[in-house]
Image (cartoon, rainbow, N blue to C red; front, side, top):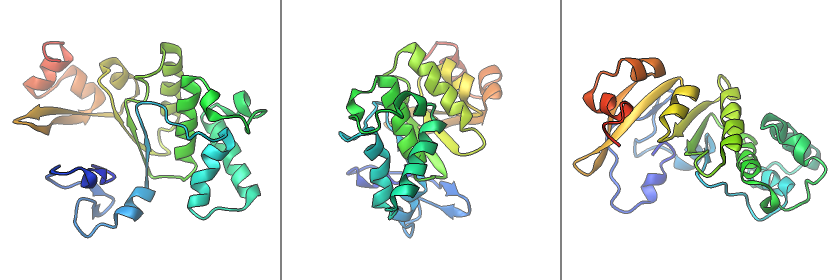
Length: 207
C-alpha cells in the first residue's frame, strides 16, 4: 500500500497511517500520481519491456519529459553501471532485453527504476525467480543502495532478510487480514523477538 496501488483492488481495506516525511500517504487528499513518482518498484518476476536494453531505460525517462538524447544516454550508462550491468551489455544496447539472462533482466529492471531517481524502492521477492549466483549478485546490488535510497523488500527467506536488512517487520494474517506483528532492528528481531509469533516463525515452528 506504500504506492497506493491497493486503491485499485476492489474491497481492499487499509487501516492506519503510513508516513512519508511529514505526509500521511494514506490520507484521501494524497496526490497518488505525485506519490508514485517518488516510489519505484521491482517485481518478483523480472519484467523487462519487449524493447531494446537501451529503450527499457529510455522509455520511462521520455514519459517523464526527458527527451534530450545526450542526457538519456548519460542516464542509461550511469544506472547500468550502478547495477554492474554496463560492461556486460554496452556493446549490445540495441539488442532485445528479452535475450538477457534472468539475473541480468532483474538488474535491468532495477536500473530502470533507478533512472527516475525515486526516494523509495519497493522490491517484491526480487530474488525468488533467480538461481543462487544471480541472487547473490542482486543481494550485493541491494546492499550497495544502502544510504542512497530507502529500500523495502518483501521476502520469505529469513537468511536473506538477516543478510541484507537493517530493520525487519513481520506481518501475519489474523482474522483474514494482514497485521503488523513486530518491527525492529534486524538483530533484535532475530536474537530477541518480543512476540511469540515472531519467535515461532524464526525458529521454524510456524510457516
